[in-house]
Image 1 (cartoon, one colour):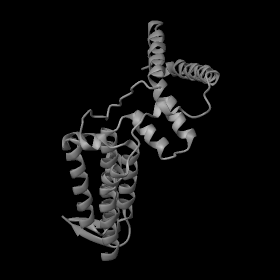
Image 2 (cartoon, rainbow, N blue to C red):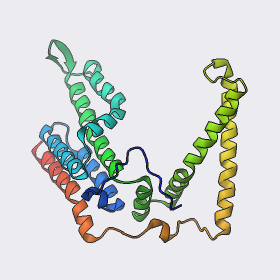
Image 3 (cartoon, rainbow, N blue to C red):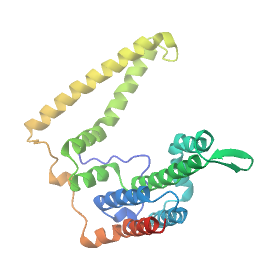
Image 4 (cartoon, rainbow, N blue to C red):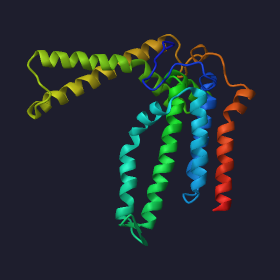
Length: 256
């Protein structure tokens, strides 16, 4: 289980953000997101402050804006929904550039766009500076329920195995004349999915029994977690961003 499994979002670097323990970064990201969500949508200046915090962290982590914005396209469906709200919203209407728009729709669309984008950017920064393995370790140190961390651990370890199995099954089907592009061959494709599920289930059972026979008790050994739990200084450094965000949110609530 100690094998390294990098993900496509992780960017190798020796930046100060990369060196922070994962549990501190996870807690900081979640706290920052909570502060953003708690901010009134009418406090436009506050979202500018949050964006500045994200830009500072990105600069410290050596993650470029082009990389961040390119990966942030994952929220495109929500962006389209946010832009549609002013047209379909109800209540008071206002003329903007010759368009009759809903005031509540404009505020709702802005709320989704601003908070969603900031949340996505914060998550991307966490993923860019923390390997998948370290994310699981951080969740375990934060006392996340064991069932979740164990499922994530085994998924991380055997995802590549299952992907390879699915690829070999597809090659076998194609070599026998199957072409999954045709709708009438959907039944064969569904049967392949069922076979893959059964193979994965049986493999998981064999792996579990093998681990139990070697002393597995439902929790990974401390050696897998590795050393380097967050110190008080590292917690303080990681808390700088969420505490600043919390101060901005509190000021926004008072002034709005």
